Amino acid sequence: MAQIPNEELLKRIAEKFDQQVMVVGEPYGLLTVETGREQIIDLLSFLKTDDALRFIFLTDITAIHYPEQEKQIGIIYHLHSLTTNTRIRIKVFLTDGDVHIPTATVLWEGANWMERETYDFFGVIFDGHPDLRRILNVDDMTAFPMRKEFPLEDPNRVDKKDYFFGR
Amino acid sequence: MQNHPVYTDNDPQSELSTLNLGPTHPATHGVFQNVLQLDGERIVSGVSTIGYIHRAFEKIAEHRPFYQITPLTDRLNYCSSPINNMGWHMTVEKMLGITTPKRVDYLRVIIMELARISDHIICNGVLGVDTGAFTGFLYMMEHRESIYEIYEEICGSRLTTNIGRIGGFERNFNTIAFAKLRAFLKNFPVTLREFESLFNRNRIFVDRTKDVAAVTAEDALSYSWTGPLLRAAGVDYDVRAMNPYSSYEDFDFEVPVGTNGDVYSRFLVRNEEMWQSLRIIEQALVKLEKEPTDIFHADVPEFYLPPKEEVYNNMEALIYHFKIVMGEIPTPNTEVYHSVEGANGELGFYLVNDGGRSPYRLHFRRPSFINYQMYAPMSRGMLLSDAIINMSSLNVIAGELDA
Image 1 (tube, rainbow over the protein chains, first blue to last red):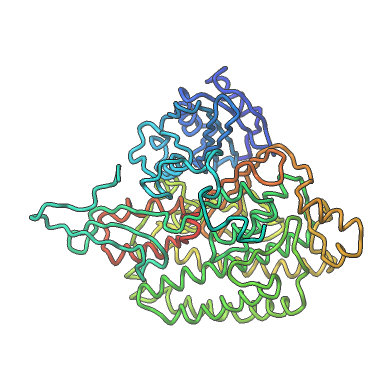
Image 2: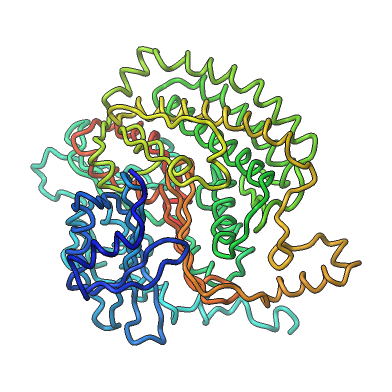
């Protein structure tokens, strides 16, 4: 089957979700939409099960941090419809202090580690996740290192003082 | 230590025993820890712990200019670094709107297919070792060495290649590189055929691998598997065929598909992919004859570092050199997802740019990370020895797993 044009895809989503899904843009032809956490699972499962769309493949879940925005943390889903070779990107923005979003593990088993990774690095809490633990960092870490306020290097390091380098 | 999974069964009457497989077990070929509960030789449950070589590449990438991120991608899947390098260059080129000349595309295809072969050599060779046949591994390893020698001629290094630049290659392929490539194309098929005749119908190997760790297509898709593992389960998803990049649409090749997703199918799929890669490289060499021989990068002086002698003797080159190094070239404020078919599956780069000299956010969709999460669930009920060869055939590379 041929690729679904973005307008058609959008029309189909709008029929079901009306104003709850907003278009962000189409950078490099990849339709990007934004929605709220209340309907994210409905949207994902609609995209996955709809006969014409069939976005059955979850490519990726990740997050992004914009400290200057009111809704600081963005969760980004990439879905792929293998039968029509169409991709879509879905974003959900959350305010810091209330970073809860329902888990996508109810739809895809593979979301498990992707969500654990997102939790590990951004502190996003996926409600209903079967095993939400840190995955790449040590268990007793307290910070969420991919947030922008987390420094790349430990500011208390003593081996990188200027006088070692004659500065 | 909160939220730690309960590993041990403290019941003294219990018949189960706990086995720490890894983190540094010789049979796991990398830093993987799995805490297994065993009933005799059968696995009752398992918990994977990963992150032993996590190096925060995504964080580091936010602090580096685009052209200095290539060395980070080397260290993801270090068995086929050139694919990662090219994937990253193509992501940046897609973001900047750079179109590369056909010759660059074909040279890239050659390098990427060589990398795929070298990755599959390791995986299938090691699978042989784990099932007790060392010979095939040694035969094949000789040719990985010749691939590394080709890399050396092109970029100077062997494992972490840092090959290519944004827009093309840092230097043209020399005649020795082409000579070595032709020698490889002549010698490797002989060994590969020999390797297949050693394994494909070998009773011991087939008994050890057939119907072991069989995965249905539904499960594979639900776990977001890609690459040879997904294709062995019967889904013909290959990024090269579906979303061609680097002029893959010009090539005639087949996407091998397995039937039941077991270890044996994965082995056959990888072997067939090596044949297809050889086919692609041969076509690329033919196509290269029609291309001008002196082009090895796109004409993008704003992003392609000029050669040093020009920087010293040519004012324009000096200006561009300065602007690139100091990050004074404006870049679009946008986001881009680009994926390439890595040796283990879809290797994706999600790049969010805010117009600066380094990414605002860079996320690697790492196939090993995503493929590996089925390992513990699928090991349930499996024999320990089967779980070992299952791990070999997943071809999880620790660097890519932990980023």
